[in-house]
Each structure stands twice: as structure tokens, then as C-alpha cells.
Length: 281
Figure (cartoon, rainbow, N blue to C red):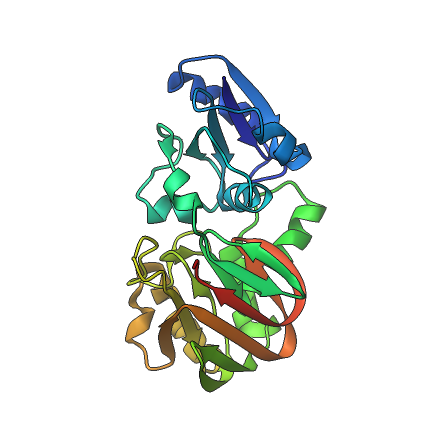
């Protein structure tokens, strides 16, 4: 049996219809299931190596499956069909949207975790603290009011110009402590991409044997300086600027001096003061 898992609330909210295109690539009986309403343990327990799961969606879909299936032995193959609005994971493994699904089971194992507000979550791509979390917060508000696609670039520009206030941060990377002022972004990266195609950590390798994560800090910059540097993130050239640092480690703690929205693979948590991200053991 082929089980296609989708999220009716993701992307432009027509992912259920998009799964029909999968029939071009899949040979067998297809059962569609909404991953938001599933009991994962009950669903996964009877599956065998002869079954197949196809995750249809974006980074949020992958994150949801990774966390809900944590601790469960998934016996069958897990394929991915990227059809979300961001698709940073797909960028990272060179998978084009709406193309033949590929196996991602290897990538779903030994994932890093982040502890925030007393809870622990696995993450696929990154944990973002700063203006990217702010963009997800405002984006969620826009989605609640309208079905129109959210323009995150416009939100980011408006935040950089007027609304978002940078914070001071204390950061600990593998036991070494650093302090930064006027921090605009501080994502901890498992992959290279975040924010719908920005190459935040150009040298990050999600398959590296050491499992280290990359912390990207854009700091000590005024609004005009930020607007000069920010567009270069789309090409990974922001690392050339002296207001950007990248620190790699297996355990990274970031503390802000004011509550800020945090995003985990695009999923928002509000009013966060600190988080600790740890690579897989």
C-alpha cells in the first residue's frame, strides 16, 4: 500500500489536489491521509517493508512527521514529494519540486533537537531566532486573515526598516561563551538553506560525520547596514561582511535579552528568551 501524507493547511492549501499528480510516479494503490489528524503510533505500527509512505508538502510537513514519528520504528520506505511554499530541505538535497519522489529515510534519522520553553523538538533544517522568527509570526497572522500567499520578503523588509527591534544576545557554543549586540538573526542550521531559499550557512553539510551545526549571527548593524547585507543571503555572500559570523558546534545555546518569536522549520513559537540546540548523538 502507498500512503500519501499531506497537510491541508500547508502552502496554498491545495496539497490534497496536488497529490493526484503523484499517480504519474507511483505504481500501486494510493491512500491519502491528512497528517494533522493522524494517530502516528497507530498508523505506523502495522506497516511493513512492502508499504510506502510519501510525504507531500514542504518543510513543515517534514518537521511534523519527524516529531510525531519520534521513537517509532518506521519499517517501510519514506519518500518525499516537495510541494510546499518553502522547500528548503528540497533545495539542500537538490530535489526539484513536483518531481519524482525520492527516499529520505536516511535524512530522518539522527536529527538534531532543540529545547525551548521546557519542550524538546526535532528539526530538519534550522531553528531561527530573530527577524526570521518575526517573519513567521507576522506570516501566521496574515494566514489567519486571508488565503492569499504570504510575501515573507516584504515582511522582512518592513521589519528591517521599521518594526523589528534587534536584541543583545549571549551565545554558548560547545562551552565557549560569546556576547553580541544588535543581533538581527541567529539561526542554528542543520542544512544550508532557510527562509525559502536563502543560503544562510553555505558551508554547512547535513551529512557531515561530526554532526556539527552552524550558528549564523548577523549583529552590530544598523537598519541601513542590514538592508545592504540582507539580500546577499540569497546567494550565501553575506558571510563576506564583517557583521556576520558563523560558529560551528554540537551544542548551541542562544539567549536574547527580550522575548522574540522563534521558528523551527517554519513553525512559530512566540515570546522566547532562549533555546538550546544539540546535534544528534
